[in-house]
Length: 532
Ligand code: ACM
Image 1 (cartoon, rainbow, N blue to C red):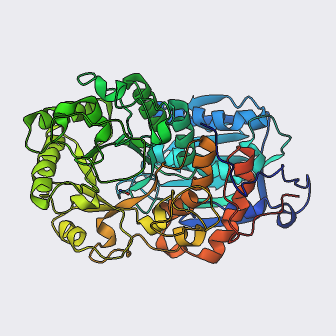
Image 2 (cartoon, rainbow, N blue to C red):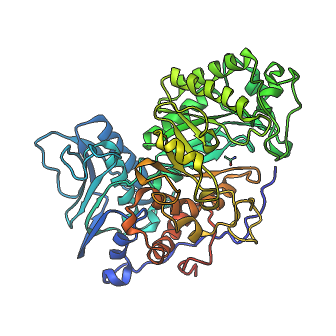
Image 3 (cartoon, rainbow, N blue to C red):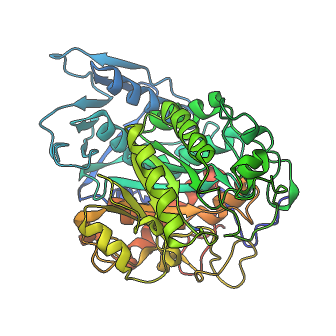
């Protein structure tokens, strides 16, 4: 299928940077105050900078997870610098050699991980060295993502660039606001091959997002191989919206995604959408359909017309087998069971099927996540509702929260990455509204929904539905820069929230995206640097 042109998408040629000059002139110092998501605190040391050179080494605490983060840092920096950047561990009493980037696991580092969420770190840059301290390897990983942003934009280049590789002096102390910071990719409406998903994971990692929600099944395609029900993927995965050839992940592909994500501190949240959005499954196994007859494959974009047979025990065998295999493949705590737009079922039948599905998830020792229409189903401990409504109150959600449910905030008119930016956007939909950058950024997940206090907000997720999205370039055009705005809402303290400041920081990031070959929407709300 050919890719639609990305209207107005642009890439910058490399932005020339003076080789010498004061921090104020060459922008080195300002990089410290341009970090996204905004850190808890930033203290520049004016006039001081660390120069990363061919002689720089990376040292980590003597711990396999810390060492892995050190290797990740070297992998990020070697292509553009061309420097060897050898990585080694330090014995407990060693002092790092001069000219070193050191990653230290120090349990007492503030902000400590004893206070959830995990991921705090401290980063100190002097003329002699860079030191990142954290109580966990996750914190070190986030410190590394920050360090990446302190280097010139050319650090994102996949080929050797001249540098100089200057890091502004100062200190950053940082920790995440919410535990769940995510994005969703719909691989059902259009299928995306495993390497495309890995690239999406990289986009999440650079802005400290830590959950990848994969919408694996829907009316148009079943995308994960299930050994006990092989026709789900073989038949249910054979097409997609507009009749393309579709596809599915083997269990080995899925494991590769899980491992690649885990190395980037990202938890995969797999979704099997039930009881509606199931035409692909029904087309593979007619016995699951209410009338026992397999429907034709579906390649359109309507919603709400399919349902599994609520009264048939085969339905629950199917759910148990599928969720059992998925639970075994998924080290993360969550199984997402959909629950949205089940228009074919009345409330009683909906409750019957979803109460049983929730209990099946609990029996697999996993935590239920569902779209917020799941709220009226019975409370199971720890369950999480994903709010995708377009209003700021929902009594069913508030009531579930009073019983202990937690909420992932994905308001459709704020976070849906498939909504058009403006009327002129050729890709995407507009049923939840037009979402340009300010709309995506200017709200507070902790106070947004009536009856859902910040303590009940597990986090924030931006879903990308793909009815109109076919290529990686299109994914990135819809994702950038809105996902970056959502990442800041999910990570940064509410006290840092400031649209006028955010739009300047965001503008400063566009050369990074260009060097990384990331397409983005050049929103007129943002003062992008000249492309010259
Ligand atoms: C949804 O957008 N149907 C969750």
